[in-house]
Amino acid sequence: MTQQVPSSAGVPAKTETYDSRYEALDLWPTGTLLDALLESQLGAVASVKAALPGMEEAITAALPRLQRGGRLFYVGAGTSGRIGLQDGVELIPTYGWPEDRLVLLLAGGDAALFQPVEGAEDDEEAARTAITTHKAGPDDVVIGVAASGGTPYTCAALTCARAAGSLTIGLSCSPNTRLLRDAELGLLIETGPEVVAGSTRMKAGTAQKVALNMLSTALMIRLGHTWRGQMVDMKIVNAKLVRRAHRMVQQLTDCTEAEAKDALEKAEGSIKLAVLVCFGFAPEEGRALLKQHAGNLRTVLKNR
Image 1: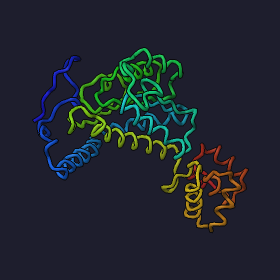
Image 2 (image 1 turned 45 degrees about the vertical axis):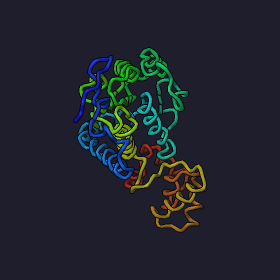
Image 3 (image 1 turned 135 degrees about the horizontal axis):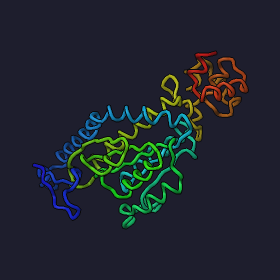
Image 4 (image 1 turned 60 degrees about the horizontal axis):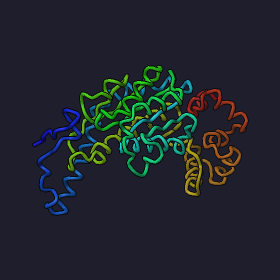
C-alpha cells in the first residue's frame, strides 16, 4: 500500500510517497532485500519506455538548434543535478563535444558536488542569474532534471531560459509538476515511491540516468559524432584509448595496425580524419571535406 506522507509544501510528489510493503525491510534476510532493490531498479528502467515519444520529440526539436552551433545546458540540484552533470561532462571525451558549448548548472555550485549546500535548491534568483550570465538564447537547449518535478532552482532556470527563447526540456519523475508545466517539452518518467521512502538517488536516479543517456547519445548520433557504431570523435587521452583508436581505424577501413597508427599520426589524433587518410585522402583534403560537411564522416564518404 502506498501512503501520502504529509508535507509542509502541500501534497508531496509521488517520489516522496511511502510504500508500506517495505515497512519491515530492515528485518528482511539480505538476499530478500537485494531482490527487492533489484526489482525496483528494473522497474525504474522500464518506466522510461512511456517517455519515448516525448524524447523523440525533444531530440527532433533540439537537433536543428545544435546544428546551428547552440549549446547544451544541464540544470539540476542534488542527485538530479549531479546525474545531469555526469551526462554532460562525458560528452566531451566520448564524442568530442566542444567544452564551450556545454553549460552545467548545479544548485550550490561546485561545492554541491561533494556535500549538500543549505538552501541551494530553493534559490530561484541564483538560477535566473546563472541563465542570464551564460546568455542562454534561441539556439540553446536547456535540460532541467528534478525527481520531484518541483525543485525551485531547476524550475526557475527553465522558466528564464524559455523566456530567452531557448528550447527547454524538463525531466520529472512525478506527474503534474511545475517542471513539466514550465518546460516547453516535459518528459514524465514516473518511478513511484522508493524502497527507502524519499531516497530518490535510487529508482528516480536510475531512470534519470537512463533517460539522459538516451537523449544525449541519440543527439550525438544524429549530429554525426558516430560512424558505423563507433565513437569517431572520441578524444584520445590515455593509453587505453590509443589502443582503442588503433582498433577503430582498423575495423572501419580494414587497414593494418601499422597503417592505422600512421594515419592517426598524420591526422593528429582525429579518428575521422585518420579514416579518410586510410581511404586515400590527403590530410588537408580530409579536413576541408569534414568542415564542408559539418564533420559528418558518412556524408563525406557518400560524396567522395
